[in-house]
Image (cartoon, rainbow, N blue to C red; front, side, top):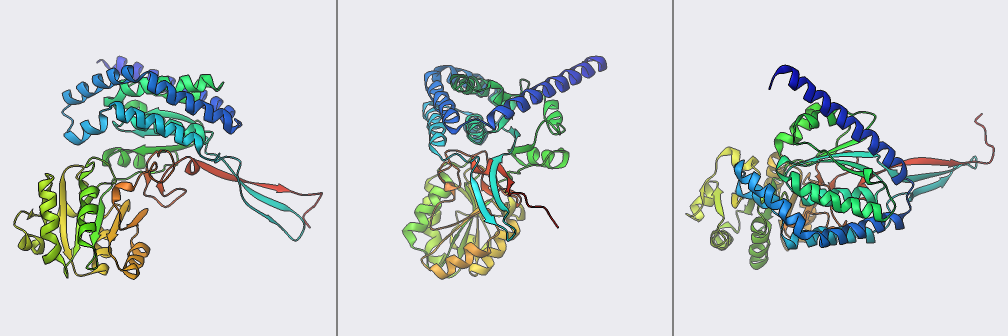
Length: 428
């Protein structure tokens, strides 16, 4: 491509993206004032459209999967990209669940009266126009748009290039729902190009986009963190841990770990590291290793773990910091809860970490001291999901500290303003 053609293409993308942004701002002005019943109607009608157009969505997805294979995506990436009837039904059910939730907008969060008679209220309002940049998980298209509709926001979606056709088909169903409810279809827009330059333009659209939410791997989140001119809600990687304490029930430890690692290895809530108390490693680790090996999991451990079970390969330093998104698990034997906490806080991604123990006092220490967005006791890390939290869906798991932490649902897509009522007071 010649330089002039490249410049023309960049100019075209810039103009196209800004036009999308202006339409989104106009749509947001309507959505922010929309009654809950109308938003819920849009979600229910979109769910119906997803079910009625399942064959078209699957056909579009087949194109994307073929494209992904041509790009040599790995098994975990293909799994995240692939849709089937059950996953389409899950998207539709998620939209319906979002519709049943209370309206997160215009809630009086707090109210108080000052000595001078002024009454103050803190009231929830939408964030505005949200730009969501994500990789090849088509269900994020429905989940993210549904949550933005419920919370009165407008959204600009930039999905991964591999999920381009699937996302287009899903957005058409969302547009059907918005139109049926009498709402602007521009409240949900999809970037109509696979060109990566569109992401750069989005990250500089101050005044048009209020918040950027990246959902993807290290390269995506790193780029957004470094280049964005717009506030971001970062969804970092999920290097999640399960710590088996010396007072853990054996069957519970085996069942929980197997689910946490192997239910779906390609999701951010999958456990990537097992920490096991040295007091019970000799007794419990062989049972855990046997179950994992039968499930097809590769195990990489420290010297203490390898001494106990010969099926465990040698772990290297980078294994403690790796989100495998594959049937691979790192294993470390630790001296107790303090060492487990220190290891997690040093090597984890502050996403989701769990302890399995019958000792509630130790559990309280773990839950208090582990510096992660989600901490769990006696359950699988794969419950780190907005749907499982009762949010209907999620845009991602925020691992930062500002504004939202953990699953980002409709309520987390609001901010607030202060409303002050008086009867003529003037400040002395």
